[in-house]
Image (cartoon, rainbow, N blue to C red; front, side, top):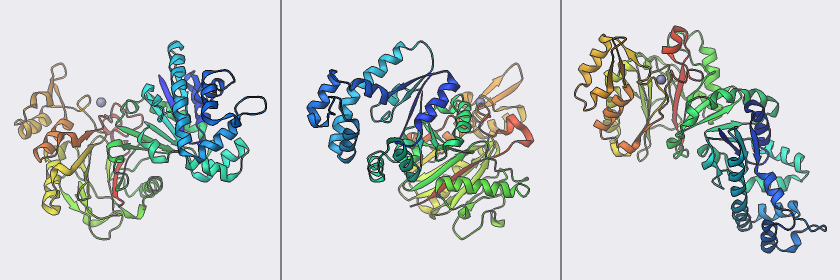
Length: 462
Ligand SMILES: [Zn+2]
């Protein structure tokens, strides 16, 4: 496995590399170290730098004054780009060579410009470290023994958190180095899950709070905020809600803090596998009587955070990018047979005059055909409802040995969305099975009655 690690100066990426090295018995390829080695007198790279930046960047002993060079490039974007393109030319080749020479072992590429140099394309997974600005400034001043203004200039010259989130599979928020070892240990289960191989999503982790985001929705991160929570966060089921209300409330708080949303704006209905959709318009609390027997929420209101809980059922995130309308739909197997996906789109068309071609639908983690095995009775319900679909023979597969059936509810939901005019390219499937990934996602099928609940959240912010 090739793991790429990147992030701003002071985000703690080197510490993460070292901790992962132990865990994976991996070799670290340190891009900064390679650059240092390449920069000594006499190399082609050295000559090119002196040619570009002049002899006054040299120390008395004739070597490059790296501190001076850093100060130049962090205050001048043109010079920075020049140095970067010069460096990429040599360092990328060298890193590729080292990967080739490495026999079968896991490799960690630690590179501050991993994404900019396109080294990320060589990686099986990209991990970014991010940290608050004050934390980074403190760390840089201490490490490089420079004053605060220089540290601020360096950070300002580097990409923001959004850039790393959009270009990584895992983001570690590291404001607290002493907690890092514990975090890195838990990364192992993420790295070994199916999710990480899926470049459609990114996991964001801060201590015990772990969420999944969909890259397609991140393209609209200035308009909407969203998440699908992962273990160990647990939002309880309807029945246990009252009992674990306090825990759930605290979990909403930590997720909302991570997403920069107000947890007081959360709307959480009492879901009962219906196909009832409700528009969220007035001021209402976290759990309200009006929201009993509701399995779909739609709103045009900013600062209303739509939240539904799941353990295997299919979450559908809806977003009309032109009219700025959002929806959160709970399409379990019963909701699917009641065609709640279709009803939600009809609702958006009628109520808000949405054009289906503007609607993006993300299908979150759910039990899939690999694990959704049912007996004749349930199969009959599906067959009766959907036998008109062209690919019904693929959707329902008979398992002769167990006299059971495997059903692809995701494919049914896709068909229902297309029937309503949603474009194929706007149906984004996370391809994540909750049962296959029950180490980090709650799954009713796997864990039974005592299973916890994941939450799907979507809110308009602009
Ligand atoms: Zn599965």
